[in-house]
Length: 401
Image 1 (cartoon, rainbow, N blue to C red):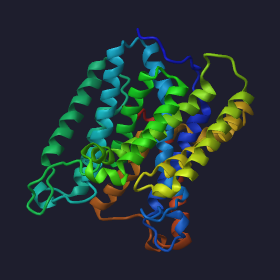
Image 2: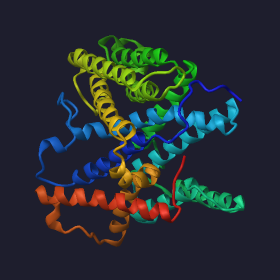
Image 3: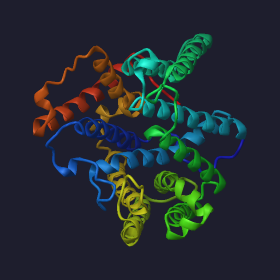
């Protein structure tokens, strides 16, 4: 069995769960409020060239950051279960493939489809896709594992069939294509690269910091004027978004090791000082790099990444102090169900939307499509979806890649 790269606590970290739960809540809210007209600019994504960001532009990087914070624990857990080196790599690749598949299916359902060539509504196709995905990635607890394998096989066959049914283009000649990977797909690539890097540097914080710098330099080199006449730099430019997203995941790993690495004895005061230094350095680096490419979520610029890392690090540090140090944790119970079932909660709003669209019936009154009334509805809807997580957990429906 390969040796663990870091000694970490074996207890579940409440602050990480709360951070994940809050991110999911905000994600549901901002996705729903995006369809509301007449809302303030600070509640929307900033345009690509705005050189600005809002709290909405931090939601996706917060997911990436949490992936990084959880990654050392996940790998240690696999090793503790007895995984060999190659079995661990197979798990990483399988998880990446799962995220890419989900991302590609979801992206192709957003537009460009040809329902006539498919022979069914895109909304019905999407519902069948989500049903198949749940069958494949649900955590089964049958005493006889054959039943779980059977359901997974049915789900996989469903995904394959739906992939073959899907048609796009005016003449319906195109099938599923990754014209972009979708949020889940982007997370998948960043997860894969971060797992590789974490193992290559053997869990060293210094090594991770160097690789974050490499990601930033990669982006700058790939987007430089010299790339116009250099094939290698052009290729690097095409992958610069993945480099940026990977830098955020690596930053999450760094902060997780700062707080939870137990290879040597440190006090909470020392951990907070290290976290503050990391936050300040990230913020200053973001400020210094801003003149190069500005702040842009769409372009995944280094300044956007570094500012998001600083914000996420500050938020997590506060949550760690509040819940794990001061033990003020009663209020966190609301977030635990969603935090333990994030993938299902992520796709649940899409399932609700496609179900309504397929039936041609929408439960949201038209008056809730605009202004502060629409904002209030989106907030209530986010809370409702989070509440559904409690029911889903009781029904033993839990997705795990």
